[in-house]
Image (cartoon, rainbow, N blue to C red; front, side, top):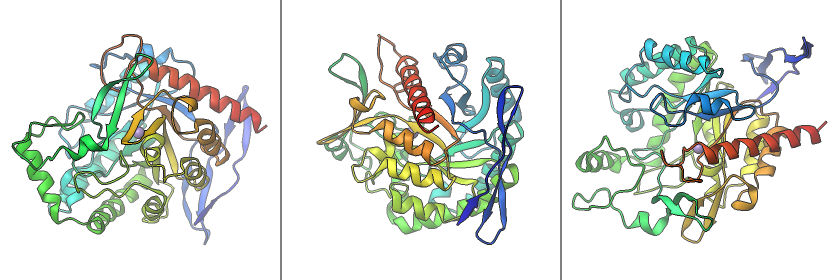
Length: 388
Ligand SMILES: [Mn+2]
């Protein structure tokens, strides 16, 4: 348990500033200092110079503050070059945007599996935290999903309005067996750097790994990285599993409130926090996303929020436009919960549909995410003014 001491807010040259908040635990032990501005900061994911959505376009979205990006020229587990990090920072800042959020520094499978090579890989991970912190990064998003990152069964499912979106139908997932080398079936979003045989081999390595083993391996990793994050004053923000249940018999543990409580209890430190992804948690009707948003914001543990809507359907879920009436989530209630909980971290629109004939990276076009950003701005402006 810890509490936030009240910060002093003051105005300088017409700008509202806030002194750092000291965070202390129940014994008065200082856990660190929160250098955060008073309001949420709007951000946008950018995949680097090959992304058809350019920084110049992103900058023109009203209220845009920060870019969310990563170094993509290094294999998972290796140390990012200072040159690559500096280049991203320069490109971002030259475009008039802040370079403060990394998504993601991926976690090598050997760390999740608890293999002997993990110590070297975790040391590399810590070095990456130090290097991005040197470049001014404040928040790092990562996940701990075995083998498969986000999983969908179709990336261009047509919606009635003529747009296309990403969908997940359980019956289609059940029809795919990644262990079956003869199977021609694959799912979009799978890591193309694995051959089918390699994929089967790595899935097989998880056969012996229980959920509790995965928790042990996650705890081992967290106990090594959080002291480094504290030293560098970087906020680590784990992303929930997407979807938030086990697929192909692989364990998934960052899935619901009970497990997020257990995760956050691993280290009593504000630098150990979460990315609240409404679409990932919201694809299970069991998760009360607004309740979780308020609870973890109040604890000072949400450093990054991915805001998007999903529609729960009989056989799974479909990604929809951000607006509450387009899906199953009440986005107003979620934003209000974040605001009322004192959330001051980074926010980004998450996946968008493809609209207006745009082509490109599924979920990461410009137009629908820009509409999402504008909607998010509107919700935050409304809840901020309502609370005055
Ligand atoms: Mn997300």
